[in-house]
Figure 1 (cartoon, rainbow, N blue to C red):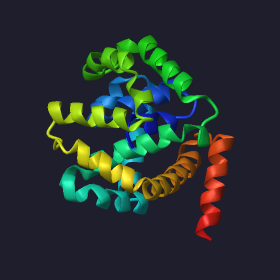
Figure 2 (cartoon, one colour):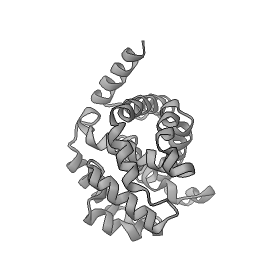
Figure 3 (cartoon, rainbow, N blue to C red):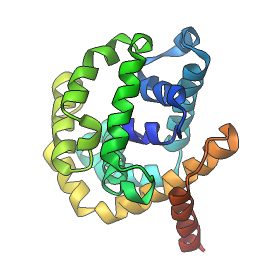
Figure 4 (tube, helix red, strand yellow):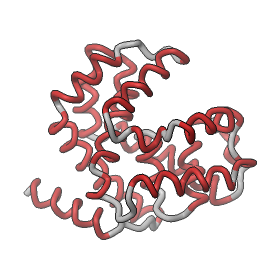
Length: 211
């Protein structure tokens, strides 16, 4: 799950959302230096990642990208899932995506002091480019992958990743809907994170289709 998925699964709790957003940048026991609710969000982030990595829907989607990305295929799945979520946002959340992302940028600015240094450094660019909203179109995903390949060890195969995403979009969406529904139910039971009415409808549809 990439940025938008983690934020979405935090519900309406701002501090949890911050922790969930910065989770990849806080390693080991460093989370203990953060405020309690942010700490909880970081731990929920880790729980989401561990649960997702073992989920059949994630594993099946990862195979679609393994040929071109090898051990980095999971990174591409994270991006693909954020694309599916943002493109179909109205299926899962009552607040329009543009307003949702703008509100979250405001939350990050308001809590700038608690953010890890790497997040502070990329936040201005993220806001200026409206990165979270841009995931809703393939050009935004392609640009994000291109940037990642420039600054990380991710292979520069973004054009092939987009081709796979386009040709398997329906299959990937089915996998993602199952995964997001299962994660929503899991987090609701374990952490009492709320499930909104739109999400509940999608979860019910997914359960019916499996019967």
